[in-house]
Structures are given as structure tokens and as C-alpha cells.
Amino acid sequence: MHRKQKTYWLIVCGVLAFLVFAVGRSIRIAIHSTGPQIAIDRMEHNWGKVTPGRQLETRFKVKNIGSQLLEIGELKASCGCTKPTISLARLKSGEEAAMTVKVNVPKETGPRIYYIIINSNDKITPKLEVSIFVNAWSGVVSVPESLHVSIRKDSTGFKGNLQLYAPDKRPFMIKNTVSDLQGLSVTSERGDVARPVHNIEVNYKITDDQGVFRGGIMIATDVEGSETVSVPVLINIKGNVVLIPNKIQVERSDLGKAISRTVVIRTNKDEVLGEISSVSATGAWTLLKSKVRKINSYASDVDVELCHDINSGAKGGNLIIDRIVNKRMRLVVPLSVRGWEAPLPTPENTIQ
Image 1 (tube, rainbow, N blue to C red):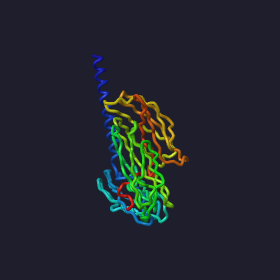
Image 2: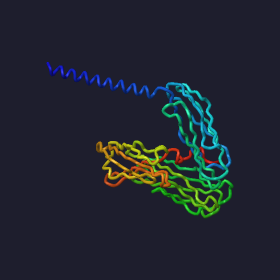
Image 3: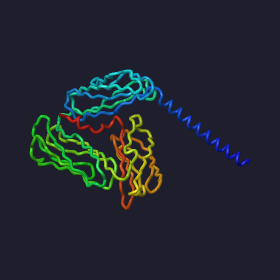
Image 4: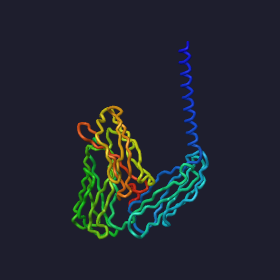
């Protein structure tokens, strides 16, 4: 009888402990979700290469995803050439407003970064920072200005085309083409002949690697002041391995600090994961620590501690995870700093 009573009270205590945990958790969630909470459709915008001296305009969607009234305060821009305005300063729960941003592109050529601070009564994010990228450019232009390709690992690769032209419509020659991405080749059609428009053929051959790869195509011309045209390239090779997250991005306030992250690696039942043989970081990033936790033949978790060297002069980099299944294969996770390195410009932002 005593044993039954003991078992009974153990069950009761277990149920009570669970209820206390559940209620406490629900209270914490409720506290976190109450009050005003600001959200925006994107944190960065990149116009890419644009004609110097012109005016640009874009819109952001700002929404109150909290439960109480969101009050938008002052919109601060890092430069007088940037003017943000908001269509509605007081947003009820679930309500949206449009933030219009106008930028007067300077007449001096070169890349620029502008920041906009959205002040509000959101207690969690009272100052929301948005990054604006623009490159005042008067030289040779590539269309499209960037390549963003997503392909399956079991495919043979892809073929694409670029067009180069000079805004002043003067004929020019192409001296050389090169890429820093493995498997990517670039050829020009009669680049040694001066013409106002050049066609560039891009070919990519699939390798054993998987993940997101960033690089570029460099095209040397004989145009003074625009000798080299750079075309950013992003290739996402998808396969049976899933990486969560597939990229790691930190805030500018995290520069120089140790950042801990976990990369979850999973495969389907058609392919075993194999052994994780090494973990490394490239570019401006230093890998301080790494630990591989094997779950089973199809899953592993990789804990990493990274630090961005602010004195390196570089911006991006990669986390490289090597696995061995009969042969060495690389899994690549891009590393970047939000609001510092420009995202790829979208096709509609290409100069006309």
C-alpha cells in the first residue's frame, strides 16, 4: 500500500511540475507577444549600378505584429541625400504602413551605403536599422548585373549569357574574362573586336560540393575608368543534404566578438551523411571552436564559435564542413555581416 501511495504521489508531482512549466512558458510567451512590435519586409535594399546624379525611390512595408498600438517616431538617415517618409505613424495591431525612401545619387562615382534608423515604441527593437546600397557608375555595364542560380546536384550544370554595353554607346573591346568560382568558365564572342555591345557566355560544371557559393566574374575592357567590370555570382547547389541554416549572418555590433551557432546537417534515407572530417572558416572569419555531434548515420549537428576579424579588410567568408562518403565532399555555409556587404541587386534594379 505504501509503495502504491508513493507511486501515486510521484505521478501527481510530475503532473504538477509539467503544469507549472507549461503555465510559466505560456506566461513568458504572452509577455513576449504583448505590446507593440515592429516588422519590415526587408532589412536591406541594393540598387546596384546606377547613373550618377539621378534620383531613386523604393518602398518598404512596415507592419505592427504586436498586440498594442505601434507609434513610429523619427526616421533618421545617415546622409542628407537620403529622405525617408512614412505613410502612417500610428499602427494598430496587424496594420501596415509604407515607408518611402528617396535617394539622390551623388555625381561622384563609387559605391555607397546609407542607413535609416526607424525609431518606435517597440520595447524589444526601439531602433530598427535598414541598409541602402547604391553604386554610382558611369562605365561599362553588365546585363544582368548579377547571376543568381539555383540548381540540383544531380544536374550537369547550367549555361547563361551576359551582355556588356557602354552607356555612351561607344564601341569597346574585351581584353580578358576570369572567374574565381571553381567550375565556372566565361568566354566572350569576338571580344577583340570593338563593338558597342558584347555577348558573354557563362558555363558552370557541377562539382561534388554542395551549398551556397559566392564569387564573381571579372571582365577586363579597354574603356578608361572602367577597365574591369565585376559581376557578382551566387550559386546554390541543392542535393540530398540539408543545411539549417544555409547561411550565417551577424550584426555589425557583433564584429570582433565570439559568435556561437549550430549548423544542423540532415540527409534523406537515400544517402548516408558519412563522417565529418573537418570544419574551417575562410575570408575574414576565424573558427575559434567546433564540435561535431553525430546523431545517426543520416544526421549530425555542428557547433561552431566564430569571430569576424574587423582588421582583415575583408567582409564575407565561408564556413566549410568537409564530409567523407567514399570521397571528400564540401558543404559550404556563407558567412556575412548584415548592412555591410551588399546583397545581390535584383534584375529590376539594373541600370537602363
